[in-house]
Length: 359
Image (tube, rainbow, N blue to C red; front, side, top):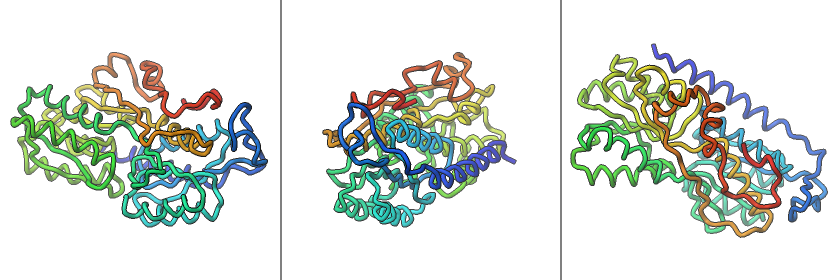
């Protein structure tokens, strides 16, 4: 019924398997010892440093690539990683802090999650002397650096593309789930731009993080599009949302009537965007591998006692379907080759960090 659904489910299965495997491997026989590095990366501990990564969102290719960046960067810094948490299970993520403390880890990365469930557990980790870095979740603690894409700019990029492409006259659908920090931050500029352009109207709003995300959002969007045939654009500021919108348009046979604008990019997204007459015409993106690497580099800086800013941001790039076609890009590897500036960033880099600290 929906051509993308099988691909989404395959990625989910592969991703679930790799999370389990990552938690089981990584031996303790080596010692973290980087020449010229500050303690504890200088071998002074006599052991391999160990960090925990506590996830909330796990589903989809973006998160798979993010996790790969976490593991690759940790390996480049001589550390091992234990991955904890279940998909959209806030209590499991909160409980994972206690697990990490009991494991005696040297640092923690908290990835997504809910402020109200993570504030207390994160404070417990800090009280235990374990540094914490947060990616895309506000734990409301000045001692915890916040790693993020520039999410307000993401939202601005997407809505401004819609305003421009439709000459500020369009009814649109909008996918949004409140309470998720990056989506909330993308929403601010989106609402401001809509309010500043009376001809741009949000005709309907949908959104869910229930699994499988793309399929569940496709179900919602199908009903919305049937009830609102006037919709000509759909703003889906998360690539799993965008996949669902495309699935709904295919289901209804109206891929030629509605354009899709999104945030994030991965190989499946590129494959869809570069198809002839694809409705998915634009996305604002940051390399997900690099976001995982930046999260670990920031944690390493905190562990080394360096001064780290409260907010560590990576700026997005805009990609249109036509740009990808013109560059003959069909996957993430080709995207990184065609657009080298997209590959990595200067965020959270210290002179002592070895080559290979990133993609």
